[in-house]
Length: 465
Image: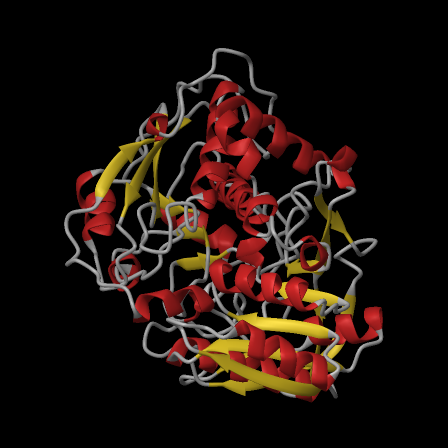
């Protein structure tokens, strides 16, 4: 069963378009930051976490593996914090994971051990910086990696070679569908033999997102907007293929990366009767497209943005286009970070407010997924009892039972399957930005009763990344 909800495996493929015109310096040594470098440690008491952990000191704990002492487990977080596409683009998962571990430590740790976190900034250069993986693995001697969010995860092969578990990483590139010991937040059913991506170089996209919007909004006319850059046009073609597989009429529009003419795109959308808009662009391009739509008075039923834009920054990014802003939709395989009806979301928000108060006005879906990644690693560690080893953690990660991070993500697993054939059941969460939400402050409002039951039997389309 394939439950991955992104239509294309690299979740931030559109961001790579910025690299086409960026002048990048050669990658230097990554900057290693302690967890405390991101925010001062508050003195108030964090809520206890229900992560399957034991509290209190355990004098029987052995120094059972690399990075594990009787009282401590060392964990590394690799993030492109100074990426050329912006410091905020890849930092959110690290904040969520650190908040979880701080709350965990304040409630006693996991079976008498606290978690010591080292955060390493790889610079996000996109040209193959491997300094961070060597810093974390060879120098810091971490037990595992967690909540990785790297623009170009060039060190993935080294992580796999060293058999270091990398739990809950963001699949920005295809490495999580290639290497063993790497576990993406959304799971993977590909062989991950280290030789080729997916099934002999082929991956599959499912079409539940397009099915959802067709059934929900009753629309059959869509536009896909992309830059005239290879990664962007490739992503756009995959979006168009998925839409056509679901019976949509598709208008494909391409704009110049340096001087995009969004007015012409909007005119074409109006003439074609576009009701639903997808894109293969960065936030800047999306905001400019929305500005052009509002200026021309072009209204659609939904402007579907990428999961990386599911955050509080919408208020500022789309400040000048209120009409378009209020039809922004985002989809993912995790809970809405504003859905406090779920206890785990409440715990996440309380910990973020305590440990990273400056991050609260910038919360996003990725902060929540970083928290879920830390929960996953903690539960895997807890399953080992006192004898914590990498082998034991990976036994938990590779078990056939799907995992949902205490009801925060769609059930995910890493059981290899043959290449998909026929239809498959796939689920997704969906939210819409509404200025009227949060007492008029604006916010993301979940649009499905429950993501676990918002499921469809859909085809999976092969593509070569």
